[in-house]
Image (cartoon, rainbow, N blue to C red; front, side, top):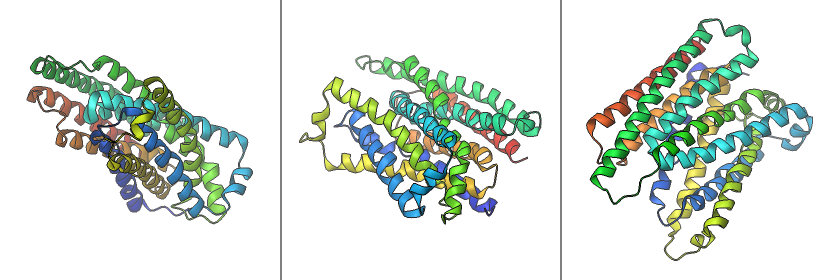
Length: 341
């Protein structure tokens, strides 16, 4: 496979921008509950688009799966299901804490975990090198950055509640726990990419282009993730009796468009990341992941501020958030520079 560092970095950064913005349409889907919006996103973004793209870009997809070892297929599906759990927690966490704080905590954990574990498993000899030291230093910065984000979010909640005492509390600490759990499970998306390399090689050998060979992985990974996402949505729809909101007269067509747009942007982020990481070469999944997370973090923080998440909070609280986000970006940069060594 051809290595193209310039295109690889551009592809990864485009993917990060999309990954930091795909939840934004959900803010305007107020006539639906969380489970309604999330189910539409799951069907479109995790089933319809990934399989349509895979079938159109990867020749002989069925034989590729049959010729791939069961161990690789099991890893891809298991990691995909684990990512699906993280995705559900991601949606719940961001809805509680907002784009800026929620993304900050989750992506701050995803970056080192998603980079560190593949390095330890696939390239343990690199642990006590500049790359390994950078990962460990970056992880420490992540912990400090998450602390500042949590303090900022807590202060924001208290200040907004004080100005509007009639507003119900959002359960900030519960949101933090949800985001931390999401940050632990969500890196499994990258694990499926790194440990599913056999699938990618099979796709390339069958005639898929270098940039599209990863679609054989995404189709299985996201299908397994769909099981977790859709399963939880159906549970909530039954428990809350919110199936009727899909056909309610006050649910505009824009909600269906918004949910579908979420799915399109989300898969687009994975597609761009896969193309970019592949172009970065054999260590693309290790080097590209922190860059992907860094761009996601910058995008989500900017969108959170522009959408008014910090309205009513003090400048000091927002300052804590900026310090936390800044530390996380520095941490991801340290991890990335070490990864390129």
